[in-house]
Image 1 (cartoon, rainbow, N blue to C red):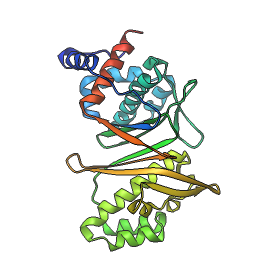
Image 2: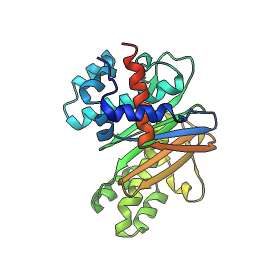
Image 3: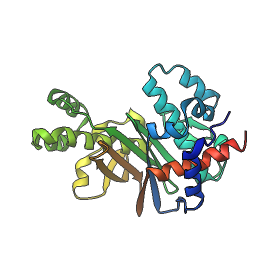
Length: 273
């Protein structure tokens, strides 16, 4: 059975969504969605959410032992398919997600190309979507990183400028600066679609002190990427977004606005069982 609207909570969200203007992706504007797994599971319980998975995804789910990882996988796919169905103007069940050889998630067999990227950490999922060019996103919950661990990782994956920047920060700030730089690096490499085949040290995040762009060289090719970082103090997560080329505007969609997309997609999915 497809994931159907359940009870008054979904009914009220459906009423809101049909009565309001939903964001549609346009050239020049990228959308960044942020969702909480516990909220998504309230509106679509796990046993219903798995019906959105195709056979290959269910096989992958079958080998995931961790309950937290299972939820990340299930609701990551749920969020991606519900949002992409709106922007591609197709039913959610017609969206098939597959990975490239380097592990980047893409939509299979669609004539209209939409660039997207997915990230999850703890209770949070983030989805970046653009019509302009390749995007990358990385979300990480706040974690206290020990001094020794920071030193080991920075020496292996940070360049000289970044190592100096972290070490010159106060002890209270080091964990923050480290996570900020790390998420920016991850977002850049994910936008480039190279996975970890390129060294993290090739991405110099100190460029963001004076610009919204990072310049890097991949396979002897210079690439310029728009890159932004946000830190949500209340929800306690770091979020970084990167996109190849020029970016005019980035809109963040979260909370009830994400649930509206999910609710209308659930309705569409249940209508085409």
